[in-house]
Length: 252
Image 1 (cartoon, helix red, strand yellow):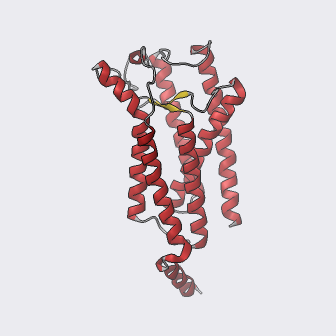
Image 2: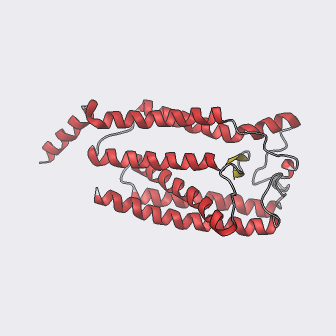
Image 3: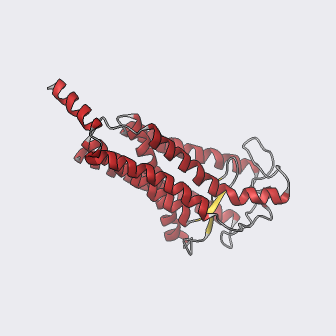
């Protein structure tokens, strides 16, 4: 268990540093494009800067996935460590923004989370809750693997996690999709190959409301999968435990 704790602490330190780096870049961007303070509608960003930002975000995800890949001993742990790193990185991003520039003033301030294929928007508290769920999932997987190293994620649990994740993503896209429909145009979608300024189609977009019903549905699906994992690991289902004992006896 000590080895697992050391791994989690090391990953946390790396992710906190990444969170500070992310917040520092955003501070610079806001000083350039939002000197009076961040707000909707969003300022138009030149295509060159937008493309650089897109690939910077992609590079950040690759770095988080890379450190998780080195730390994990199997596919289940690598995925869990990636979620753990992502969750801590995202939480620290908001913490450092608050410390550096005093934003957000409230957990219910709106933020733009990702850009592709559509802008992901939502109140700050929503991605923070997702990050806490990611961290909780990783702690659960780590605890279960320390008890039963051969324990795997079942197909049903994997399906629930996948479905829950897609539903949560939909909740972040929902308000902007409604905006696109009201504008009756698909030209509000930006891609790295687009020569127009990023957010040029969002010149009038101000978030109208976050669909908490969709969001909580996704959270419940994921938490249900985690609960099922804990239930299996508690000893109620002894199949995996018996397999592990058989491996230990075979190896002496």
